[in-house]
Image 1 (cartoon, chains in turn cyan, green):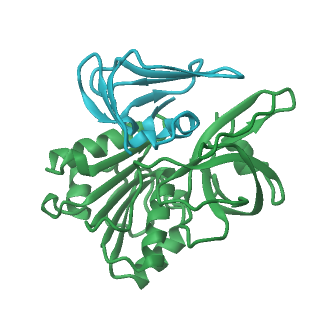
Image 2 (image 1 turned 90 degrees about the vertical axis):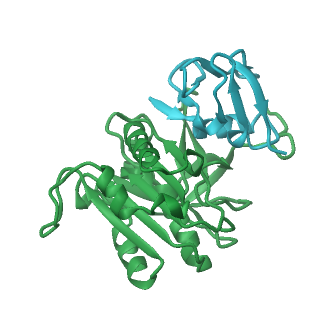
Length: 83
Length: 249
């Protein structure tokens, strides 16, 4: 099922101290930049995969194990966080 | 393994269902008593987690339907998805007195803040009306002066959540307009045949782009993308359009 970055808010709030869906990502693939809330999100993978709404590259993925959260940001060139 | 929560981080907690309210044949509101709820902004959601006896658990996000007057219960309205793993349990099985595990409030982007001075356009597809209802209720409670226009697309009149409340609010509040779009069957005497939301709908029942409204669109993915495309084509600033997709076709 395709969702959007709003659905990441809970998982990211477990990791980050700031509200991350209002943060601004820059896609490492195409340099598109927008709010994390606008990412396209798939939750039925083993973990959560978030893709760029412009080019479709994976911007971030988040996998949960019983004791850890593994956040992969290979596709993120930059994150601007609200403070 | 029990672990101590980090201060300020989001943690799971137990809530109690204090009432249930059938909104439509397939949608139900759960009224939740959440100890220590810090309050929420209209548009925020919560995550709900169900755990089976064998330890399997499933987690879903649900929008909050209620406003927050400073205390009281938190309400979520859930649409049953026929092939859903979680929603049929919430719409058909959960009863008053049951405990539910949740965390929230969550999200800060798809949020209307009453300090935003612009007029507001809310566009809902099906149960996408839920977070928008929280905005409408917050506006009503605060007697906020920003005028709201609402376009609410449903399959049939029976599928409209909060229909009576919306009717009452429109009657009592000159700053609130609600226009229904019926996609499968319209009420008797409705001036138009059933149709999907289109350019004419948004042009006639939204705000002109010159008014620079804050726009919130919530619904199934294809609905949200259609509406966002129409808004941009009509000249609305993409930066003023906030969207929330809840999957589906």
